[in-house]
Length: 142
Image (cartoon, rainbow, N blue to C red):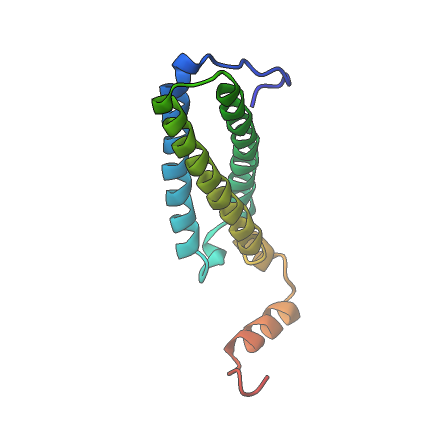
């Protein structure tokens, strides 16, 4: 997001551009979520810098989602045509899906951070041994 807090609101003629931005972000974020989900059982393959970047990008994306929400609301007050109103409904739904998926990415990144290679290398031998033992114990023994 730009350093300034001023948003350049777009005329309703730019609806296709904003719609494509929301769609592309939703597709990319869904793909990121899939990739991070695959790493859930192997977070040690990630480092803190990777998680930092994921969190930075998706936190910034949340700011854009808020801007999209406000832009859609502005267009609704401009008395859109029936076709435009239908497209605004679709965009709102997709933007909400984008918010949900982005929230999931941020939550998963926070979870993965606990097991990154940086965290493992920062553990003492005792901590690492205890964690390994606790992970390998069967549920009945706990």
